[in-house]
Length: 128
Image (tube, rainbow, N blue to C red; front, side, top):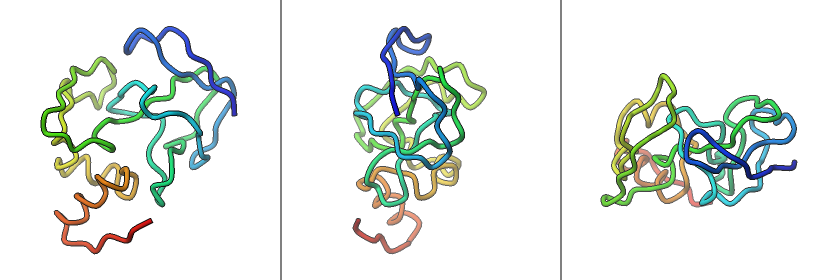
């Protein structure tokens, strides 16, 4: 899979798919280069080893991730520019605690955040 960096309406620059990507397909990109979206195209794989397509993607779509799936930093505060119908306006390091966010991304959080979610739900966490 090939990606390209180009202009993005979300945050000036972003990573874009140059070909279609099937839901669940691993996407080997540096998560720190991805823009945030409250309706992301990528999420963490169930085993926490990397990112995968959260739905089927078309060539030309921007690769995004919801920062709530990978950060529990209480000092994180990011104004969201995703303009999706799911937009939370502000993204914080506490968003992983929102029940709707936990349901939407169940099993698709970065390992460190998934562990926190599991503890709040009283579920055992399996190390990957």
